[in-house]
Amino acid sequence: MTKYSVKKDDYVMIITGKDKGKTARISAVNKEKHRVLIEGDGLKTVNTKAVKARKASDKGGLVEQPGSVDISNVMPICSACNKPTRVGYRIGEDGKRERYCKKCGATLVTKKATAKKATKAKATARRKKAAPADNAQVDTAPAATVAETNAPAAEAQKSEE
Image (cartoon, rainbow, N blue to C red):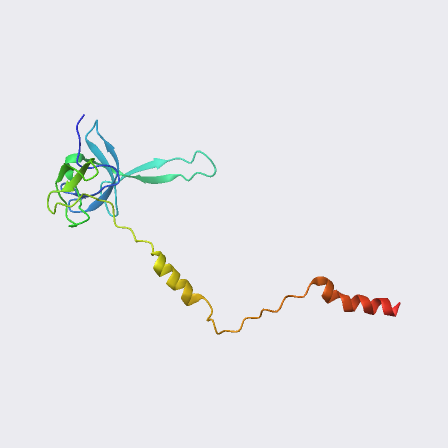
């Protein structure tokens, strides 16, 4: 079985064909046919398929499916140098085989960068700003119970009778 430099969920650049120069995400790899299914905005290699509604809740019509491209026509994009690159393999610090970028030498992580969550220090600072000031007066009087509030009315009814 042949090993490929791309895998599912990698962001790649298409290097030949109708969509040359565009970036896409790999949704599946077909090793037997040497092809990858790609998804992205504005790609011409998207397949449309007419689908009938089988149930009342299903929608019919034209459905777009990811297009298929030969695996040799895509190159993974390195997140460190942000360029399409060839892939090398080496043994990492943890003893496992890892992919690396041949251009910059960084470990190849081709997933899109996601927004980082706020650290605990920032979150607590936000909470302190939202909390009321220490010198603000807070009503600490205990709430009256239902029996206490209805007691004068009950006594008034007894005296009338």
